[in-house]
Image 1 (cartoon, rainbow, N blue to C red):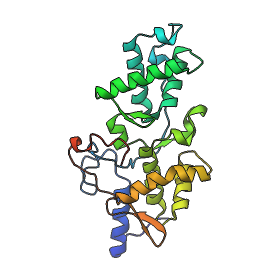
Image 2 (tube, helix red, strand yellow):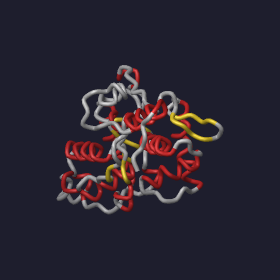
Image 3 (cartoon, helix red, strand yellow):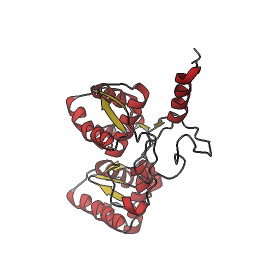
Image 4 (cartoon, rainbow, N blue to C red):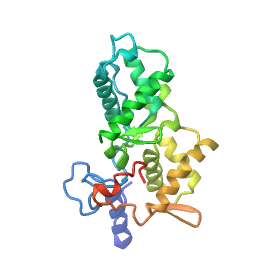
Length: 252
């Protein structure tokens, strides 16, 4: 069924369709200023959902050492950066699982955990990546996280707590954008279902509450009569200088 674009309401409908689904090959940004430029603060990924891609163990080059602590520092740093580049923002437990799998080590002990964390801290201090609680990623990944289908992730990775707040904001924003006006609980349910988490449990609602509140505080979403709508800032790509957001790693 073709949608009619007659009259003023039709113009609004056409605008909404164009602005909510930007052409990834476009070079202009008249409808969505700055959408095709690197984000300077959190911004939604409006492209098609993509499968979750896990790093390939063989690309990390950690096998053959026998002992995790025998892996040279530079080799482990490179493996961590490679994993973050492919999967970030990613949870520490996911990162550790990838490293141990690549090194053919079966157990994440205290000393291994401490070594991984020490290298993460060093990489963050050097500006190579950013840490936000248990998550590691690049600044660009926090500012515009990929919209990913987590049903394609390895089974051990498909845990809602392993999805960063920045990515959950994209999930919730997309759910409201597609279904507004929508009740908050329904938006949570729709958002999780879209990325491969079929059940909205009480724990999941608690997990999603903070990202949802952050979206409303930033006016990316707004509540009217107990339902959610896109907010005033929904389609504004923020252009402040990167230095202003150098400490903002949560996707807020």
